[in-house]
Image (cartoon, rainbow, N blue to C red; front, side, top):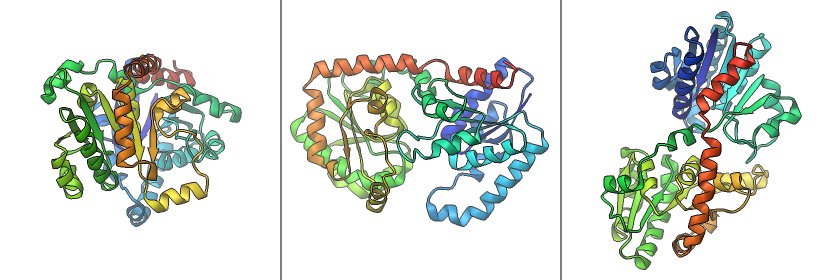
Length: 380
């Protein structure tokens, strides 16, 4: 059996590597090739193209690389067809992978996609086109298959890889020891987002919020969790003085440890809100978009969901506060944080709900996805 896997970014490489290993457990003689990152290559995927060839960010950078990206996709498509692959499996990166899936499906190759685009949150009109492009869609959340079934697409919930990983997360006491935080000290984690643009927009806001929290909680530990060490300079340039005044400790590359140790997180909207939730850490979610982007999204009514954070979307209620754009002020965010810390019963109920969702999503996603793929091909 020959399968082509196509990851478009680092997170997809991680998911693709887990999938590759699960497929090899079911079919040891399977042949796997495609667009792969280092983790997928280590897991046994032959790299026809490597992840860095696709990894460009930002509108102008994409435009300047467009001829090369079009050429890459054409070469990739030709090789998939010539290899007579049994199936093409795009892993996230929908802008690249769904178009490719459509093209190879027209040439008689079974087309699959792993990770549904966020059609429940914005641009829901994509559902019909996605359904016409695929034979199988593997989703991370249990509510997603129902969105596609009216359009005739075989969509299956396979669990979330993040939930699988978090079942064996570091103990709270061990996490605090690793961060050198006292066992009984209140710890608030501040998360500006993983992208440089998010740090540009959020650094001063978080620093000002931290200053207000320090005034109310003089003995608390305030920790800024950065995705990468190279972001320290940008953060310091944006908010260094205020961070020093608020006595904020800056740590990089230890987000999961920081969240496992924290009593509360102030988190930029994104996947980290799901990680925070599944770890049972109460949170306040905030986000500031560039002004023009926010205006465009509102004007065109691109956003359909009532909520933006994954905990609220999953629970279909405002489990955690969401503060967007002008609502994301230092006074408002500090007040939301203090509200959490003063309501132990609310924290208890939140953690119970989080634990239920952890077990609902942690169903060995890689093996579930591998079984769904081989069953669809009649080789399960």
